[in-house]
Figure 1 (tube, rainbow, N blue to C red):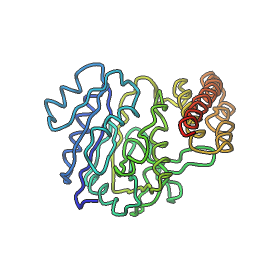
Figure 2: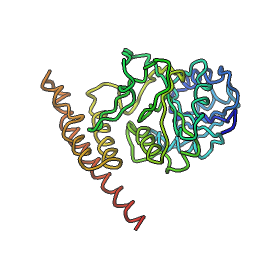
Figure 3: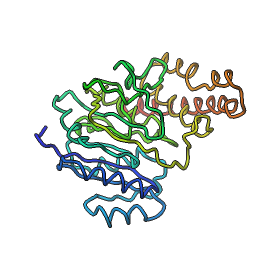
Length: 306
């Protein structure tokens, strides 16, 4: 890789012009200058476009009609446009901090490195830092995603997955897989986890560098709320997670997920109420749909490679 590789920063957005403005402002305060920015906009109006054209004319603006809740497709559009050797992805409600881009670029010193992410400050949540690196960015046997992207012992460590609001990949690694999977619908949860798993299966390492920092301001959501026992949230988590497990792991791990994870049963038994009770059945339905989608995907792949 070049000494000063071009970084393509890809930002999917929808109906958050103020957040996009703050995000872009933080990017253009970086001292590293070899980068381009691509905004893929699925907004129902032109407010975001107007902000970019007026205040950030150097940004490559791409309109994505009917792109509501289609982040995987939006990221794939950005990948096709990007010219950089490193493809970085942040959310429109992310604020990159000083030294973010240098930390990103410096992490690609080894050709084995396929992806790098970093420290995330969740502005609207309590940030309880883990004490051990083994509790950062892991995927358990039954599919639980351990995040805790606020570990900082001054070292870069190898991890299993990254968060979509602060991640990057070597172009060469991205070209070896088929982009982001559009089968992660709704809240699009697990689309970035799936991407990381496939990067690792292609023979690359995924790293976590705590010097690559962002503040995640958690902008307004429209389709799926952040409330834990929201019915839509529960459906898309269980649907997408079942598909993810079936696609990427063996039948035993998939079964372990279905029987033990995202059931809402323990929460209901601790404190019964109607939302938790309903989420039990919504989750069952989501897992059934996820199995169906996963089986269809596997059948298509088998037919393609016969």
